[in-house]
Image 1 (tube, rainbow, N blue to C red):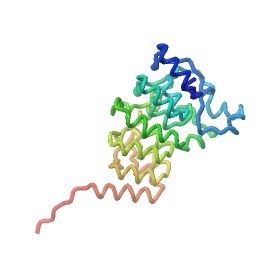
Image 2: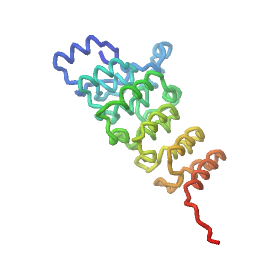
Image 3: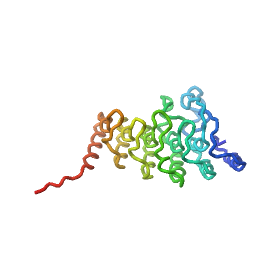
Image 4: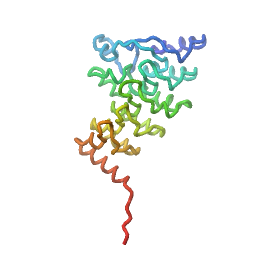
Length: 250
């Protein structure tokens, strides 16, 4: 009912005592996303690659977020849905808004990558108006890593997927750790530099991201972006601007 945006049915379930934070047995192939057009939805083989048929335990809130159902998200939150909980794929509602599909970092492929790199207006609206503005959203949730091998954080994920608008929302919130790293100590700036995304590199540097911190490979964002002259110049300028002025005695 949540994924299909059946507000009346869900409201009735909640009134009858259904636990809004319960985990439900789910399969990703059943999840609606506004990123999936009717044309794509009618191609079963392709759909199996876009949202693989993975059984997991889902949170109703996360399904509503992925579905872009803002009114449903509001209903669930008003009924006490916990914005900090992770589902069976290790994702918070914040992570689900960034993905926009029922996927995780381990199943991105050639079929779904073009869709995941898009940001649907409903996901942006939910992030801005429902999640980031929620009174129970704490810093620990904003920086919460996904429970998987990469341990990717929300800002790292948005940078990895090239989702500039999502990054702007997270950074403008003011509470996100701009240098919050994944399990291999890669920062959002490193992801953007590695992918040659000068727009996102500039955005992160404007919010005081550090070009010189290193990951587990010993590489900094400056080294990851060494093949892109614009990114190198941006990082070098940021480093110069942060060096303390040395007074010259006369």
